[in-house]
Image (cartoon, rainbow, N blue to C red; front, top):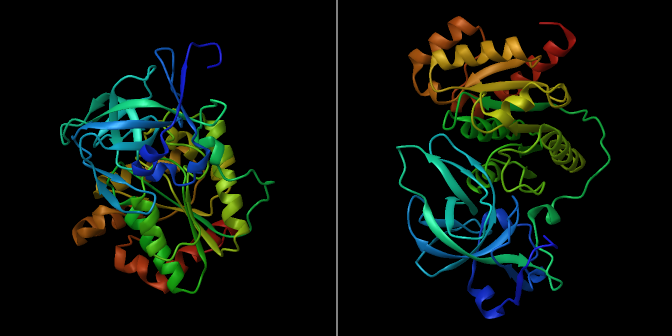
Length: 360
């Protein structure tokens, strides 16, 4: 950005104090923000922090604050959010714009982007007007990557790492994660939770904390506003760092969530990456119906070396769907009550141990 003609202005501390700060910025030291960088030549990058004015309410009328509270947004409110891409089939596909002009708030966790397409299920995106990129006293633009957890030397984890993936957005992955976390916690284990792909949002994090996860980290802790269009090498590295930090906290097991479905490009890339999957002990697959469960498990068995140890998700709301899936796949089908049960949760660790040793 140094070759561009830019405008740099001191930020008004009174305005900043009144600004609503989004979840995606929860690691950012606000004292670092001293100036705003603006101008026609500014080209935002994913993760750049932007001060913006909320102009028009659409799909997202509230902003998730760092505290966890959902704050109602009003026209003329100023917000601090991060630029990022978004992939959400039930909401928006959006990309970081090439300019600092008007754009949209595409996620309640605080993601500024330009909508490419949207689902017919949702309203048009809320509109914001960027006022400038947040920068330090020297005019260096601040990015979420500046506040990522520090790199740690990689040590192969010696504890179980259970993944949860699914057919699509809203297949029941997060409920599977938090109830599995609860079940393992009920068994007396210290459980860490990591979300490695998705779009910055606090709901999943706080639910995992409520279920007993500690620590609970996601890709925003690794310096990413979202993971859409992030390279596989970068995702592998940041996933390893999140795992390293979690292992060093002294947990007995880690539950890892992958967002969206098997066909989402970053999730698919990770699940077919030996560098990532070789760390996993097993995977619970979440689906909306029996056919989705069968197709998903078949895809995993054909394309990966992952040990699928159970089925969960929305389909478990229907006893008939559970029977259909279980009869065809031959795996435990786990509703939320089962996942909450300490004995059932621990049995999943036994299943992965048997697969690792070739017994059972």
